[in-house]
Image (tube, rainbow, N blue to C red; front, side):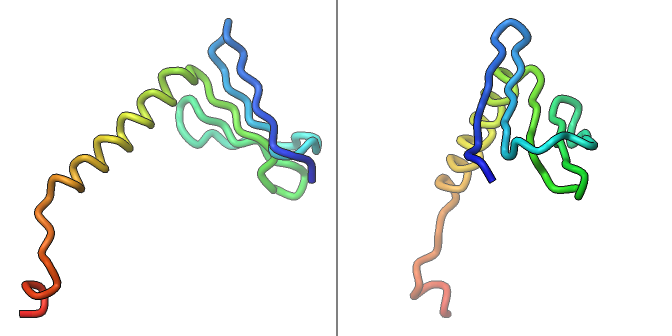
Length: 83
């Protein structure tokens, strides 16, 4: 298996992750803008993300917001939780 490669096509705003150089035999739409590329055995060999800049921005924002919400929740210390 070769190293993972990433190609970004700025004009089309498409991010293509190549996991393997094997030939694509099939693909599965994971979401409206994300497609998994599969080899003949059904193994993942690549991922294509349309509107990549928005997808990545939104994913990072969602992850950051989830972390911030988790930090804002009061956490009980061990003594309180064992009562």
